[in-house]
Image (cartoon, one colour):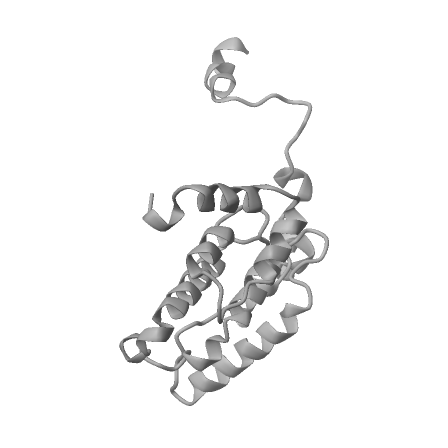
Length: 181
């Protein structure tokens, strides 16, 4: 355990993050101050359950990534390197699907800002300029059958992809079925 995480500070941090509801933890992450806050604390909070995709995107944008998006990593000033590494971490988690959209609110109001970010990155790509943090528009689409392209949606049978509750499936049952009849 790192020295700065030892003792009462660690217990207070664990109490803060583990305590409260998912909504409380989400609000703690959204209130993070990139200028004065502890980036190690932010990284730890962002790795906890309860941080949804909308909150992660908001935290990413709150870090003002546009300042360093086109600066090569080796040219980032030393005082901004930790913040850029945190932005890198949040970006990788978002792109990998670590954060899921809130089932009720989706991505929320940050969707419009992210669509602007994506439109700017596509415009930049057309001019031969590629930024450090790239996002795909599909990331912001809801995870529902209705959001799937029509050609895929029409082939899928919702009954086939939902679990059947009346039949208990198991590997042993499937293997022994021919013998049991």
